Length: 113
Length: 112
Image (cartoon, rainbow over all chains, first blue to last red):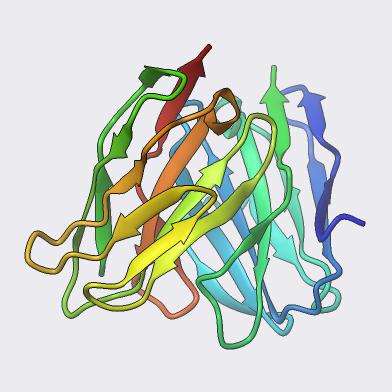
């Protein structure tokens, strides 16, 4: 019974395409996040939502648009994909009162050709 | 905002060797400190934490002590196993209350 699940696990696509990654958590957490991990394992926060409201929006191209239909879901849509978008994208969530205890999904490896 | 700096890897050890992965922090005040671990093909998971100076976090044989004198939170394990092979991240709260700032990660490989 996966706590934070994201789909797909792998995504291979051509430059210029639009793609989405879905994330769902069944932990009852209020806050969800998207991170990008590059090939050197460096992890960078992209977005954070708390109760469906955007809290953190780091310097990310506006081709990236998060959507939170409810507090259990935070999807990531990417328009006009570029080679530099190739990375592993992680979704995470954290409970109220313990924002720094984050639970991560298994990641989506995006390859842009 | 707060930041952490951890030793770069990769680190390769033989089974049963002693492990130290260094992490130092820069902060105003004394923020909570964390070690997260990422096993191959998986997301990160919390390994241990310390919320104030002199606290010792421990889990699965790993330990780290929050030392304000040296602004450090080094991760140690007395005898590593092959199953400890993973990437280890030091972390601290970032600029906002909803943000964690991670170090660059240290890849550990343990060989039999």
